[in-house]
Length: 124
Length: 331
Image 1: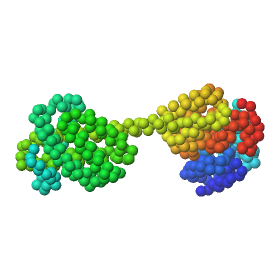
Image 2: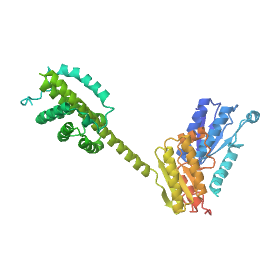
Image 3: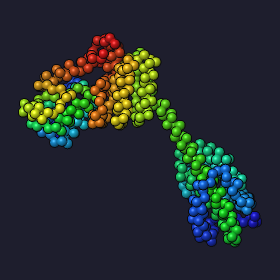
Image 4: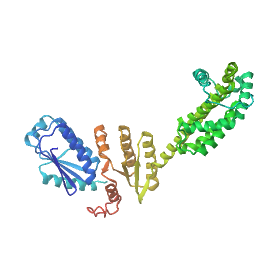
């Protein structure tokens, strides 16, 4: 599988190495859902820098990864969307509604820190 | 009463005849049995039939010992009732035999029914199956029929009349025993379901105003509804402010149940309690997302430990174990 999933403190970092087939995308989704529980991770960073294309299937899968992970108690941030990909996605109006995006890994972990802290505070 | 002609069910000359008879008798039963209710049977029986029945009952009583032994032997031969010892089988066989005779004689099945129910109560917990019970009753019927064949083989016409009297009564007894067994079994299943329902959804108080609701097993709509009611009652009774619902023990979930969970959370919120859902397995999480159930307003945490930490924080206990938060939120 061309996705490396690393663990850093409370977060999982999934780094996509090359274009993914649909099957691989589904596998990634299963694996992340499992690992979140196993490591009690509170956040996931998915690095999509290696993807030259994000089609509607990948976009929808990313969305369901985010929702699944949230049900398992982890927030997800996407990093590294290429400029071309970003333009294409906007033009094709791919809906990334619940997705949170960051510029790079640093920004992603900062964002996750905020999200998981906020999660604990917005109790009222 | 012939002078004590011994029962010889294995007599070679008897067999072919009996095999010819058997299907006939069965088809007879099939057409007669259904429209006959328990109470009208004895009245229906003609005088000739009942005198014949009395005759054969007293004959069968005479041969009680051999037939009973023969029956017990056939039972163990057929590998029925393997959970019971030889002695047990024999003593039960004796009782069944006597009850059987009474039922044949009087045409009243109430005693037999009662006995069959008691017997079922005793043997069901030991894992006796329906087919075994039916098997032994049919064996007894067979053993008795064979002894009748042996006795009346000289006089075919008389044999026919005896069988006419015997078969319906015997079939009726077999049906009675079978039905009693199945009824008893269903009663046991129903009892168990009831107790499962009561046991399966305890609402536990973890701390003051903090409840845990562990759910284990299959969540069906009726159980989900009952669970909501129990939870809401517990929230009111304990004046709870935070509830952790843990569904680690739930293997699958469907749209109805997922929606019901959402409603439970919503209702709890109206009662003034916040709900944390924990222990969604990865399968359930993916199913819920695929189903498109909106869980966005639900607070979900990966496992029960995390859920309790979060709940303690929400309820205003210092989350010491959490390590990452030492503040005391006001609730």
